[in-house]
Length: 265
Image 1 (cartoon, one colour):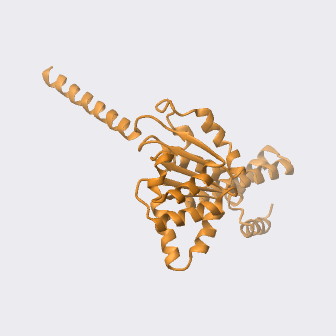
Image 2 (tube, rainbow, N blue to C red):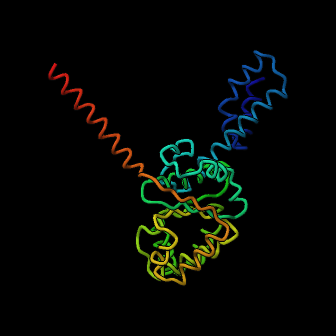
Image 3 (cartoon, rainbow, N blue to C red):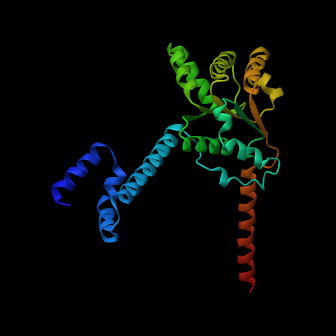
C-alpha cells in the first residue's frame, strides 16, 4: 500500500473519529501482511477493536459525569462481613431489570455498613450498560433545588434530574430537612415516579422518615411513591470503617509485640 493511500486512510479515520483504529493501524497491517490474513478478517478485527474502544470511552465518560464518590464494584463488596445481605438479591439488581421496569431500590442501615458502596456499584453497572446515571448527596440535592427555586430555574432543574435512568440519592436523614426542602424533594420524586429508577440510601427506618421530612403528610406521599415498586435492602451489621480500624489496631499491636520481643532477645 503506497504512502498516499495510507495518508488518505488516516485522514478518513480521523474524520470518522476512529481513534483506536488510527493507533493500531500500522502494526496490525504489518501483521496482516505477514500472516496473509484476508480482508474480511482484517476488517472484522479492526472494527471489533474500534467498537470495544468506543464502549470503553463511553463508559469512562458516563462514570466521570455521574459524580460517584467512590468507584467500587460489586465484586469488591465483602458479603461475608455483612451476612444480613442476600447476595442473590444484589445479583438480581445487577441485571438492571429494575431499571428497565422503572422500579426503585432503598438501602437502609446504620452508618458504615456499605450502603453507598452498593448504591454506587449498581450505578457503575448501569453506566456500563450505557444508562444515564447520576449520584448526589441528599443535602446537596436539596441545596441545588432551593437555589434553582430562588433563581426561577426549578422546572429546568427538575426536568434534568428527572431524565436520568438511574438517580442515586445518598444519605437521606443524615441532616435535617425543612418544609421547603421536603416539598422540593417530593416534586422530584413525583416527576420520576413509575418513569425512571431512583436508588436511595438512608440510616433512618421508614417509620422515622416523618422526622426526616418534617411533615407527616409529605413523608407519607414520598414513601407511597418510593415504595410502590421497590426493592428494600435492610443491612444489619458492623461498620466497615470500624472493621478497618480494628484491623489497623491489630496490625499495630503485632508490630509493637514484634519489636518488644526483638528488644528482649
